[in-house]
Amino acid sequence: MTDILLREDVASIATLTLNDPGKLNALSDAMLAALKAEFAALREDRSIKAVVLAGAGKAFCAGHDLKEMQAGRQSEDGGRAYFADLFTRCGEVMQMIPTLPQPVIARAHGIATAAGCQLVASCDMAVAATGTRFGVNGVNIGLFCSTPMVALSRNVPRKQAFEMLTTGEFIDASRARELGLVNRVVAPEDLEAETTALATTVAEKLASAVKIGKQAFYEQLQMPLDAAYAFTGDIMVHNMMDTDTAEGIQAFIEKRKPDWPA
Image 1 (spheres, one colour):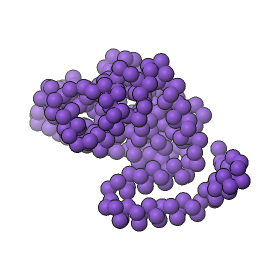
Image 2 (cartoon, helix red, strand yellow):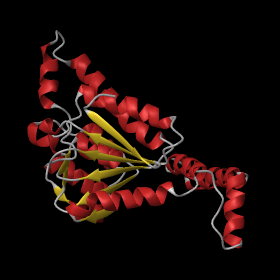
Image 3 (cartoon, one colour):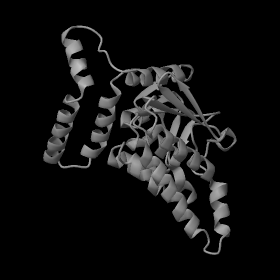
Image 4 (tube, helix red, strand yellow):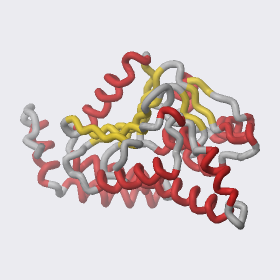
């Protein structure tokens, strides 16, 4: 891990901070590599039960590094191989988030544009400060946000997503909440505390149950209704056979706190 991505662990919550404020925390090659490495480490870290993703400086993330992308055009093929590799790598990083055992919460402020908006949409939950603007505005410079569209269209209703993609217009935090892109909108001065509170609530749950539940959540979304019920029924059985789940149910019956592992 390099200074471009900071990690701070407090109790069972890991906060990853995109730390390239001079470039508005752009998803450069170095930033993508750092995120990939840290997500891989978190996947194996059983001490962490929730992850917060934040940005340093005045913005959450402004998307890809356009200067770096333009430099890629200097190769003999005009950048085709570099661009294909870049968007593949970015897609891989985005897809790591729903496969992590821990819920990941975006803590958005300032702007989250293009691939930065994609990053928010890829997280399991998001908290935004009032005044935050979200957009998939690549169309304004002639680059349709096709890869950010994947995550956005799985969060926001179809017509609203298409409007954002084709107009390049920004939406504010309150509209983002109305559309389902973020869960909560809070005052800027409360952003860190409110996001930490949400992460803490999640981290206090039985980690094994949250892990299998998160995995099942994303898998069942891709299934027809009958298959989803059959699949999640099996998941519930598996969950019920966990001794910690048995302890949780018994504790509820006995009106006491469950004796779960830390």
